[in-house]
Image (tube, rainbow, N blue to C red; front, side, top):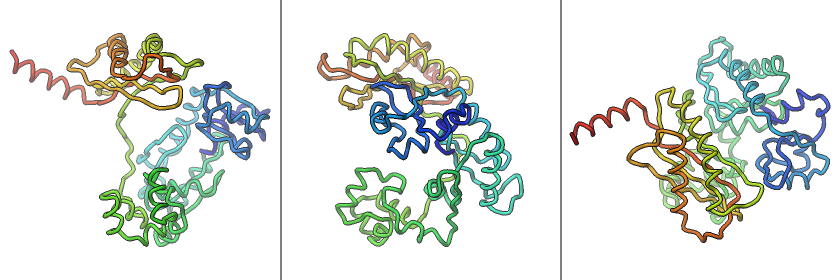
Length: 352
């Protein structure tokens, strides 16, 4: 979807159309959830501190996010996808992979399917979407950005290497700033230069990841579309108006533990339970810390989760005077409930 949250706001409030809209709470601690294309011309981007967005675009209109509305539109779009295929892998509320090797509609090609989906989205939601069509997921994702907004770009199998050759290596999945810097040291800035270095040299330098880099440079990616990706973690976090010490975090940890436990209970209805408690902290200078614990007896209530999360502060070996701008509480290590209970019965029998 194109500038999804901002586009929903502009659709629902005609006075915002054609204006720089920033979806964010205003204030020093807020970050940008989305920016309209009018705001992006000023350099405003998602995840940017809201205060910086305000400096870049003083005339921006700040709108607080309304995730209930965004989720409703996301479900509407998902229903459109489902008319064409059941192989849908959501990445977020506004983005998904679709495998249309075989479709329910019998349309002649993946390109025709993408066009039909985009037309239905426009007609039924009054919003626009951009699509990339390619032989695999990572190429389709790159292609989806090629003609935004409201665009369609197709990479056919025989075009893959030519399409990749001039791209910056940072476009490849898994190549972040650190890896990009390492490749720059080797004189590599484009995918074509990466490919030319050869698999042997890349493996010698980076091991198995070197082989993966070579495959990506050739456009090879066998990861399938996964329609039912299992939840790895549920969590809730909060950024404070004023930085707090570790001792001052307890009421916030307990409040977030309630939210996380509620999310966990929804997951438990599907037969999966979490065993690992995670405490996330971000210092005043933006350094992120995490501490985790997998207790022998998993938490059975929000209060028990909160007690364990609060106790994890003891593992933070930093001066008591250090300040924190964010805290989060998570549950991870999901297992099937039946399997977990069966193991518990087994151990009970062993020790009887």
